[in-house]
Length: 106
Image (cartoon, rainbow, N blue to C red; front, side, top):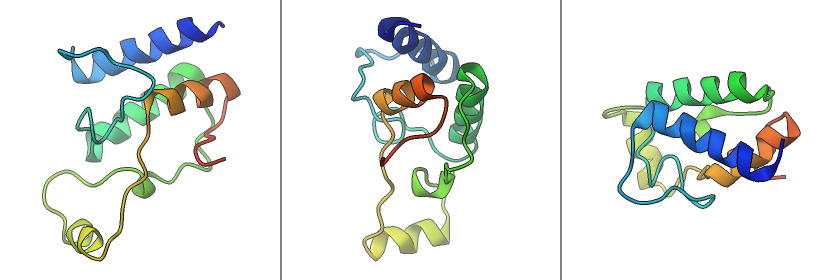
């Protein structure tokens, strides 16, 4: 599969889950910060992504990347003490789709 095809299929998956956006989605678009993905919605998206692109998520830790939906005391305290969720971009998803496994941070 060529690069643009994979990228476009990931963008289509984002649109399926989140709807269309006024701005263009790029490889630098962040799922949580730019698209507002969190909690169950983010979990469902990541699972659908893994199924759609046959990506092994055995090394993926959801809590490193997404906050829970709504108010969560743990997330609130985590943000106060300087904890930070790692961003996931559409480009990160594209790399993982090409490799068949989660590769963020490698």
